[in-house]
Image (cartoon, rainbow, N blue to C red):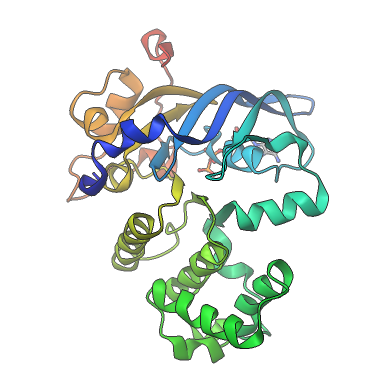
Length: 302
Ligand SMILES: Nc1ncnc2c1ncn2[C@@H]1O[C@H](COP(=O)(O)OP(=O)(O)OP(=O)(O)O)[C@@H](O)[C@H]1O
């Protein structure tokens, strides 16, 4: 659990940075899938909110939906997601279009996805890829400042400045994912959405990167919506955790409370599937092998 911010979670809810209201997404087709169903969720300013749940429960669909990255056959069928900038006011994300939306994504809300490290351009060095963000979004920035800021960003995520000259294939997977986190942080967003950002990495690298993210959050004050099926990992880094099942949030609470006194049967089963938080972990969340269909009592909502 994120001891550094205990208590801060409740306080930050009085100051939300994103609110999601009655948000629903369907995948249209012969068998329409109701992937996200009437979700209400608030992300507090500076909070790390964990979103947990087995594969296919709708976590990514929710993240893509908020940031308007969904493509047909996905359709937002109800609700809205709003951003509340530090500077005041409210932006209904559904009203943003084209250039405005693209600028918003880097500037205010940025994203790091699982395969992000593979989306670096293989034929361009890291410096050019970082500089590119500033060329596009901060056109008045001098070349000198771009290079300096790009180096600062790399150092911030634990990658040596000298790596600016490297090409993606010269970096390890962990380093490439750190570069992606640096890119996501480049414009000082108020929210970062991280969808399984470390899943493809080995546990030591995963741990280092997560420590970095929590440290940076404390330093820079951005909020994080952290999505993973790995509940023990969420318990360590999150202020609050929302547990998702079949498109719905079945439990939402402070990470510590969720761990010590889960209310929902499904949450209890998720926790029980990890026999020890330090030892070997259960595997049904990863593989989806075991049958863990919801019982009637699981339907209790928050
Ligand atoms: N392009 C698509 N067309 C139809 N159904 C889809 C599509 N993408 C996702 N779905 C369905 O929507 C539901 C939610 O999927 P989603 O990827 O959001 O879940 P998830 O919790 O993020 O899972 P994972 O951890 O495996 O990424 C699933 O039932 C999935 O089969």
